[in-house]
Length: 301
Image (cartoon, rainbow, N blue to C red; front, side, top):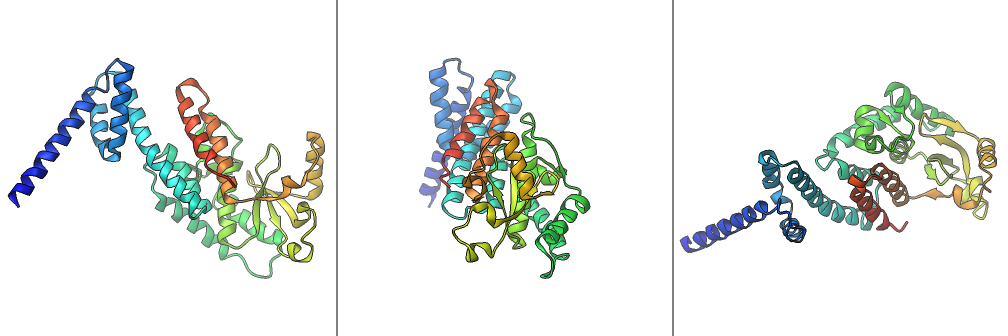
């Protein structure tokens, strides 16, 4: 027993000495040495993050702090990458996917808080719904709770503000662009059995209320005929088919069938990743844009 404990103690001392040696070399000016050291640190895993954080607080060099921050980010991204692949292969559920994307920017996010906010919204809307409401009346109820009672606001897409794309900050600040508001809207509709889906209208993130009976009565019809009306998640405003026809005329784009087919959850998250990646297009943050593109390419909706 004592022999085992001594052996374990020696292994721990050896491991701690190795970590100290690696941390000591983080500020080495030789790029080859630094790359070797950083790869070794990444191979250790997230358990080394407290050591890196302590070093960040005590080191005096700003360039070394930047290296430490990048190493911590790479450690978080490695785990996020694995979690994202598991999400693709297993659930593909929209709420979980949007939380994983938010984790990219906020690795310490508390999913429980997001779940609680969504549940509060769902319950308030559910209490006002009944089976006798028309589709438009159902959406009016949802809009009234979401935008008026809950005070959710829409903002124009601004690639200088990544928070506007992330579900945790969208719910926390009650402020989101059409994409993040739209994802919350889609999650609520799914939980409430309201047949609203995102559609691939060019230069927009629009939602559509689908006629559940149309597929049964006319399965070969044009996809646009399955849609009763459209919803802009920026504010909840509803649009008719004539409004969308006018929009296509202004764009001088023919309204092909693909624009009216519902986007599945994987495609919605892929769209979110692609748009979020545009927030990091400067030289200092290019690696973030590349990582988000790497995640996006994993999806084959």
